[in-house]
Image (cartoon, rainbow, N blue to C red; front, side, top):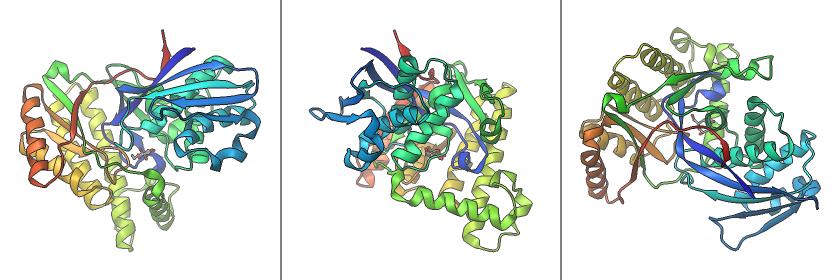
Length: 373
Ligand code: GLA
């Protein structure tokens, strides 16, 4: 069987902005999900995962929707992709899929989109070679939203498909989703080379997993929609800081404040990177993003706040939680030479709070989903 890989992501900035038609700026990780795949002619899907030894899921291609509630939760992501291909009329004659994921689950690093995207690019090459990148993203997102039942935006799938090595991906989500031409990819690859400036981006996975299917994420989405409706705008992307004063409900005002200020922070960071400014300068935007996610959007946790505080105490230029929140990971921008000191700082601060040390690793912008040769 041939193999394909799709990466997880770190979103540098632009959290909870994607489903508000806003801006995001992710990089792909070198950690990814590998999918070995081979075509079958018996109209069945045979699915295994290295992370679920001994478990084999077999479902008929024509029976996927009916079997959805009977298969294990993890299997809904890959099967959702197969289902989406079938629904779109692609000639899937059956497929064997063997998954091996290296992206930690629930760490805010987009393991589920990596899984869906790995299967999506595999099925493209086996059954639908003409699919555009836009279509790949839509298929992977639909699998997660409709078959796995997790109401994500388009950030994770876009990052996993479109990111390139050495770059951050600046995506205007409204322009991307509204582009009339299906070939059009409204994204800008922005050079992102921290090493040249003597810097490192560290991920600290707190080991407290989140579960985006649990309702709090959907609740935030609904609150953003309610705030947009109260302001009479299509999406919070269209609201300004002045508009915020018109929101009388304090909760909706806090949620909208995060989205409006976060979009501004993405644009500010993009501008700083485009003009080749010292990347240390973006640290303040990272920390401001965290404060906003903590106080206004209320998706941080004590462990995430502790990790941010620990990073800042040992000299990080900026730090923030990444992904949907309610658990997961923190990124911090540090001097490369300070890596050991920062890792020790995390361990010390977590031990003092009775928590086990986070798993810390450095990340560099890697390439998007592709076939392995
Ligand atoms: C999760 C979702 C994304 C995005 C982020 C928050 O990762 O899958 O679509 O909304 O949360 O920025």
